[in-house]
Image 1 (tube, rainbow, N blue to C red):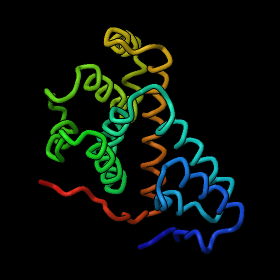
Image 2 (cartoon, helix red, strand yellow; image 1 turned 120 degrees about the vertical axis):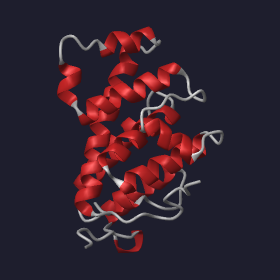
Image 3 (cartoon, rainbow, N blue to C red; image 1 turned 90 degrees about the vertical axis):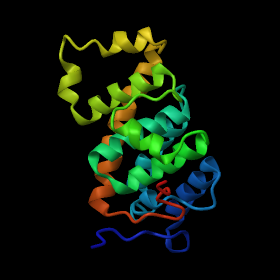
Length: 190
């Protein structure tokens, strides 16, 4: 059952069109992703979610591939098919040496020779922070020291923790709105 109508550009208010134009320009895409079209009835909410997306997913010092891999693993483990497809597709486009099977293995907690150890540690810690936040808050869990030892700066650690928050927020939004996939999602399984 569709819970949220997608607002297409032609049907959007002038205020929403302005946000859509910014999204298309920054993302370098002629289309606005469905998860943002689902917010096209309310310019304030759309702008807030777009700002979070832009500053968490697009901007920053953490490599885009690492962000996409983190979001893929959290989405797989949350059972969110849209976000799994979206971030899997993005990761495969960012690193053509990876296969969909590599992503699935990574989401199952297996190590990869294709990724640096810093990526693998960050993926595990941020996934735990998103899915079991109280476990990383425990005093004896020294995730910050582990990330520092892998070369992450304080700014990058904050950015990584922002990925946990962003993933939970987006998985909740997409599940509650029942967002349909856009083409070319989902990635093909090998």
